[in-house]
Image (cartoon, rainbow, N blue to C red; front, side, top):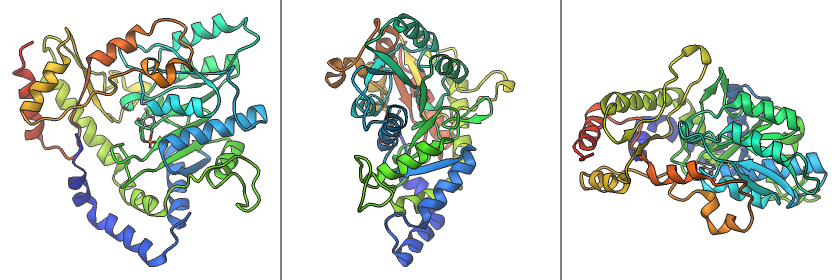
Length: 385
Ligand SMILES: *Cc1c(COP(=O)(O)O)cnc(C)c1O
């Protein structure tokens, strides 16, 4: 799906220089590159604070823990505290909710975008309004495949019901919603620098973005054992810092992020041009038809739907032609053992289940050559519909 060696060769001079710099200064824990990256990304996103973490998952967990401390004055949420999210995401989104002590509530997705359907959030909140023993505390919208959720509707609903919004921006570094960078709109945003993400390190890494001073302060404490002074701590903490070495590599790669996002978009555009009109395929919406909406999709994935139960056969056909594809995600969260006994599912999640059976993501390596894209689209076209 990605050719990380090719990307390294492309950026080798910058990356090697960044690593050499670390070898010289030897400040491995919270070294100067961590602060520099936090400041750079805060500027890029237009937020007050960025806090580096050891992974995207930790960025989610730390944000939720900080929210529990801020909103409830206690270390964790309680089981009756509910957080609404999508079942069609990477397991870490739901896992973070469980680890924060709260209960995940899954709301179905909009089949056109694969993102959480804001109408389903509203419906659940209106139905729940009369409950005294349970309370929704927040929403985690996931900008899946790089595509923005309907943030206006989600923020309006959150305001109306006094909920926090934690954006899962793991797949959407650089995407825009109404000219605002994703991750800068909610109460906080959680990014991942996992190697396959749009801005990926050479190992694990993540970042929390927020305009809230208290969330920034608390997450900074939590990532280094739970206190400002690590020998005299206030909270139940973690060792969840972003590595200096990863920060240095990410700073080098950050120079290329806009160029690489553009490259992804161009590949997506080519796929759409070459595959449109094919029977039995539904292509993703990657380019906003109206430029005034200020939506920019960084095309983390180019994910098609293969109808009539033919997804696995098409995937096999492509594999035989030397083309690797991925299914993100084959099992929605509500069907996993870990969530089954610990979640709420207000109604059937038919759209998420259908998507899990139909989706297939095509290779979207930013340095893919036109001839390679052509090979892929020709192989798809040769598959009997
Ligand atoms: C990758 C990802 C995460 C977790 O990030 P890690 O850095 O791998 O811990 C969370 N949510 C989504 C949607 C992701 O794609």
